[in-house]
Amino acid sequence: MRAEWASFLRSVRWSHFVTLTVSEPVSVDRLRREFVAGFVRRLAQVAQRRLGWFYVIEPGADAQRHHVHALLAHTEPLRIPQLQRAWKLGITDISAYDPQRGAAGYVSKYLAGNPDHYDVSRHPLPRGVLNVDAQEAA
Image (cartoon, rainbow, N blue to C red):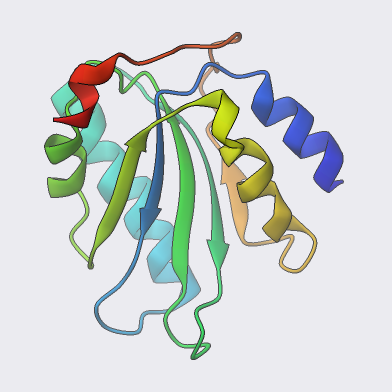
């Protein structure tokens, strides 16, 4: 299953790779809701379009502070600070997606242990590779 997901994820034209942490412990259900109904919805409003995404929730070191690894599509017009402001539960680590850095394989590695702690957007995902230019680093 992991290899199939990794192959599929590598075929999508992602814009950003994000890691979203929490400052206080929250349930997996709350983390899931905040990602989809909060973070993604806020970004879609700023981008003025539907976003594509894939996320996986990884347990934290203390088993109470799970965090999200996600791939985002259609966010290339947004600057990293805009993406950072959309996450309300803690700290972000966000970078322009670079297919050479292996993020698609990285997020799929968590599927073996918690197959119910992931999801993919129901909106069509762009296929192919997108290289977001250096302006994203700002």
